[in-house]
Image 1: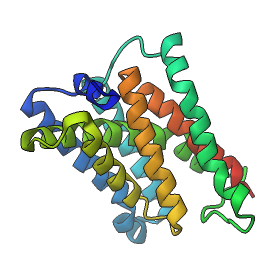
Image 2 (image 1 turned 180 degrees about the vertical axis):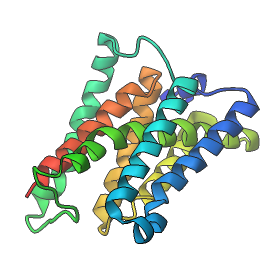
Image 3 (image 1 turned 180 degrees about the horizontal axis):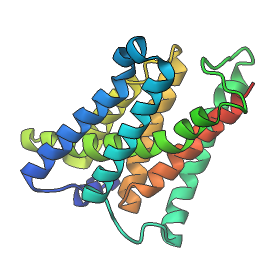
Image 4 (image 1 turned 90 degrees about the vertical axis):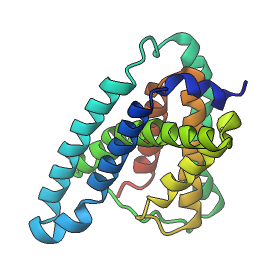
Length: 216
């Protein structure tokens, strides 16, 4: 049994629960995209605050209702997850090492505390629940129904492709590839640790390295 197959144990077998996960994912997706509509109407600051509050609310509800696995933060899981910290670090540092002209498209300052908190803390929490949690589980169920989900490779690839495409703020192929790999690795970590806490931590580490690299 592959590591991706082990993830099956984490997802609800009840079809009603799977439908609920899909609906929650769609709601979360709508919240993430809401600034495209709300910014012209209420301004960027208020639109950002509303989005953050709604994302926090739906994330907490979904995690507590469907993914409250216990005993995830143990030494064994730390040892399993440690190699992926190095993988994430390598992914983030590679363009800086190979291309000295590389300039990230997003810039931060030390005064942008809300933006940093959102990217380093809230975004990993939100995205792991709804991409590596809800979306991955729903795609696993769909693949099972058509006989294409064995090994969970197909659901992992589909989930990761959708996750990377949704990062519309990116402009370079490297950035899309990096978040695609991030998603694949996070799914693997979820499978071997049987929960979402370590994927959240690794995603937060990934984003923190990104923010540190582009401070101005």
